[in-house]
Length: 300
Image (cartoon, rainbow, N blue to C red):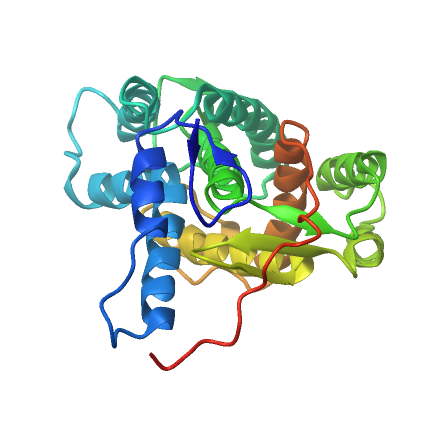
């Protein structure tokens, strides 16, 4: 086990990032270097590391869209599936992620693929290219898109040492996540109750704060805001993915168009399902009573 001199808990030396993280968190910027700049850069680096799997998948989507041969014997979607499996194997082999995070990716792949099979059948979106490795009309690489979200949440939870206050009883979050998941299917046949689900979600987590450690001190934000920021980032990534023809919505059949802002709400609800799934494998800790909060950023 490794321990920083700034964190209140040990950091498992399960990945290659653990030692790098200790070095970055114990680094002292030169005199006169604004501390907030270093903390901002460290925040960006940690976020990029947490996004590693998703970032690689997004890069693959764009690269194959631009450069993959149209007459290749192996369809592009199948190449993406095999490449995603290779990335996953390499990350485990080189200890770039933990085994528990790989299990999260597998769970999200299953949950996402089930939804994909139904949604493509219902005509919500489609995969316009041919493939052999598929279930129904869904190429198997699509499950890795959901897995990328689960991978990010699991990694960012560990890297930033998430802790929470005013977090509701877990059974309530599980029940709400299950209701949201069911509504993704049921609203095609019954009344869409997503507004009511948003209301319940807001009521449950209105007072919930997430505490996280970037560098030397803890910071916090409302958890509802944190989920929105991640959902907005995923929405931006979705625009890139649909531009790369990973999948298309009905209004993109004749050419790419920006994904509707309404999808932000769907991603927010999916974020909640993802977060609750990850929380089932992580204990929801409270910050220690003597946890130091970050002061206002200094000029130097």
